[in-house]
Image (cartoon, rainbow, N blue to C red; front, side, top):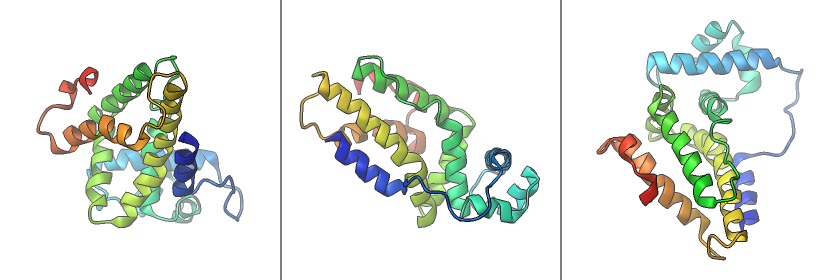
Length: 198
């Protein structure tokens, strides 16, 4: 079952292992652009106020260099956040699905509580009126994490910790829904969220 979910996730995030045509791009420039994007988002506070010109200037590259890597500002912002959180949000494999999910969720909460939480808030807020932005967030952040989560839950099923035929999407929405709700609505503090009771 997890394989079906993973294939759908891969088709949604456009992963096909190919490199766009054109001359090779500098990895150093790419990292500088990602760093500048996060820095300016944190300082300027919103997606609408961010410009490719400002990012290029801060990273000391040309606009054409930015567009060689990313087709849109939305794709760049989503990649910048995803790259900054990728290592932290890897799902562990402790031998317990409950521990694996709990550890990853705690890491996500720490990121949301940090300055990077402002970047996520800007992405999600801007995405409500910008379909391109919310699609970039889904493809470049949500679906790669979702693919890993499917694999983690499938290990739990294989070990007999979860029932065979479990609805993986329902499990994930039930686990992460409260985190996103408290992060965005702020009716209760995110740090008060008790993962034990989810």
